[in-house]
Length: 153
Image (tube, rainbow, N blue to C red; front, side, top):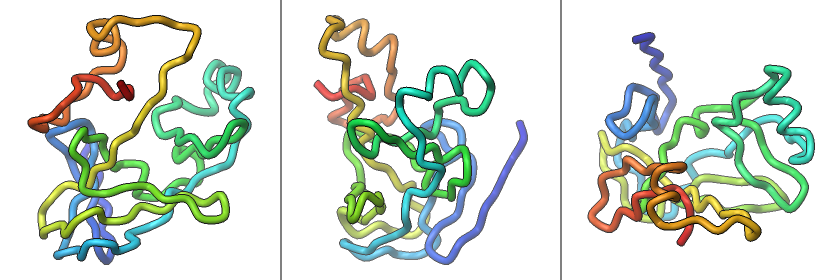
């Protein structure tokens, strides 16, 4: 396994038990702290499928910005792209002037992995059972209240 470690003031990127890489607190982070911006290239959602086919993105680090735009953390992104999903997160994403920032929802202790609820929506035209949602978008967060899927219920 290729091990990447990125060290920042508040955080450290390293292997995660949840999925791939994760972001971990290097020190106690107080509740309400703005940890960092979710950075990346702003892209039109209508272009994402073609950009996937042409190899410009894997869509792994894409965050919804508004109805027409997304941010692709794979292109020009920062460590925030490595924050994993949790159904019981310790962080949240707040938007100011069309810019997403990651904030601590609670006090985060040194060594804790940062997480936020991805809150993936499901397409209104597609009906899926709870079992299908868990199969197509599985969640590995391990929280007591885990939905079993990255999708919102």
